[in-house]
Image (cartoon, rainbow, N blue to C red; front, side, top):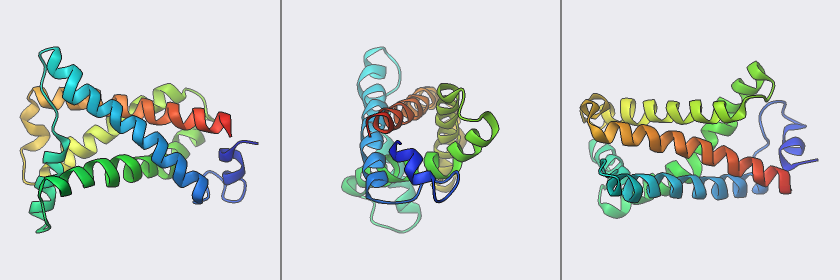
Amino acid sequence: MTMSDSSKASTGLFPRFDIPLLGMMFISGFFASNAFDLWGQLISPALGFANLSPHGLARSLLGTLGLPNGDFAGYFVHFYLVGLIGYPIGWLYIFNPIWTSIFKGRHIFLGSAIYGFGLWVFAIGGITAIAGLPFFLNFTGITWVALAGHVLYGIVLVWVIRLIERWS
């Protein structure tokens, strides 16, 4: 029985929040965040596309909310709160239960890509508006690099979760 199966045994579609699940969230979020940043800050600019600066969006949001918005705070929010905790929770407790109910656990690659697309809509469509930035950043080059990065994040996140589940 995998960690996923044992965690879901007592709560239906939702995994029980425990230490192994927290570890799985951190590990999968770590690899997904690094894939996102590798794409957005190294590969994309090397190919002549925009350079992502997600900590800048986090800083803008923090500043709008009247919170400390220095570089450290921006990186902390982007990498730790969003990448290691927020987005993995979104997959485990919101998107995956809905996807699994509809598709009975099939087409998980497609589901992970759609989840990444949803993250892009949330971050670049929603958070930018709250932070006082232009809607979808005026659909400039950074918007499309961010789309690819968020889809990549979703795919890597779910792939690593599946690897961990298989090994446990």
